[in-house]
Image (cartoon, rainbow, N blue to C red; front, top):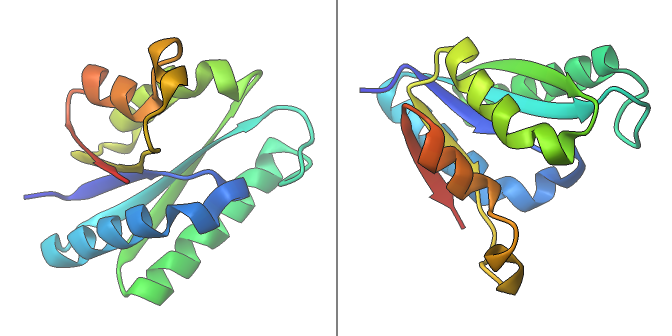
Amino acid sequence: MFERIMVPVDLGHAEKLEKALLCAADLAAHYGATAVYVGVTTEQPSSIARTPAEYGEKLAAFAAEQGELRGIATDSKAYASHDPSIDLDPTLLKAVKETGADLVVMASHIPNVADRFWPANGGSIATHADVSVMLVR
């Protein structure tokens, strides 16, 4: 049913993604799919990596670690953006196409009053993606 499951990750908050990571891994194992971990970083040095290339290496290591831990096939794709907070949704939608994903599994947040002014990333991706999107709280 699924061949490539895209899993957006924020390496700075990976500990908060456990439910989504487990869900994506379970689906990948069940369907024999590849989990593709996608991350978006700034073009400037950050607390995670000094360069986009270093971020890509860290994301690839994270994907390999998830594959070993969960017993699934993995891949990764890193994107650099001038301002990830603004470019995140369009970049993730671009990644859906470029990775060949047929499902997106991503962590969501508990809704709050700010959602009335700023839409959640998961809702935006689910609204605009051409593939199924599973939001995990």
